[in-house]
Amino acid sequence: MSYSGYRPQGQGQGQGYPPQGQGYPPQGQGYPPQGQSYSQNPYGSQYGSQYGSQYMQQPPPQYYQQYRPYQQQSYYPPPPNANNQYWEWFVAVDRNRSGELDVDELRQALLNSDGSVFEPDTVQLLISMHDKRNRGTVNFEEFTNLYTYIQEWKKCYTAFDRDRSQSIDRNELKNALFNFGFKNVSDNILSLLERKYANKRTGQFNFDRFITVSVIVSNLTNAFEAVNKSQKNNGVIELNYEKFLEIVISNKI
Image 1 (tube, rainbow, N blue to C red):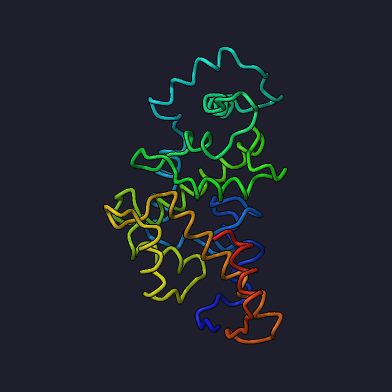
Image 2: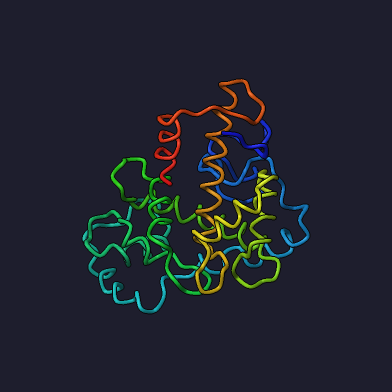
């Protein structure tokens, strides 16, 4: 298996991104590549702060207010020094009062710019990245980290939304991936990503799918680079069937 567009060493570390000091997804969580600066993009600095938290700062939509009565009858107190707004959102969607959010509950707090909730597989991916206890859920501390992470992703998303459509088209995605360090993503790969993750009606990528695509490209590129480095090759690797399955399964594709 060969890939001539692999990211050169030094473009990204660990699980990927974001660029340090740029206010994109928190370091250590992944994506996009560390060291990449968005301030050089004409639209990045112009729109990033203005629109970065436009939707993720908002409480759940009106039809989730049915859960608010629970807030007055909370079965457990908030942790010390808890962010009051985050705690309100957490309790509002913790329907079974377990103190943890599963995929279905967490979805109710995560919105795209069109008001739709995140897709289940994106939510599962986000939980897997923040679930330190390996329970398939997030507690309040993990929810706080996850929500902060999403807010930072929103800044990144809006920075690359050049036409201010509140969605990402094919060219904007290609530009984003280029800036993340994936400079040779082919048209074939972009078409594959479109078919699998773009909105079927609009052909564009909602916020949650932009996160998913970026994470998948980053994780697979990192996996490729790890094998490439171990084999001391230059963009061409050899994979047997077992190694191929190991990479795919470990990246939860």
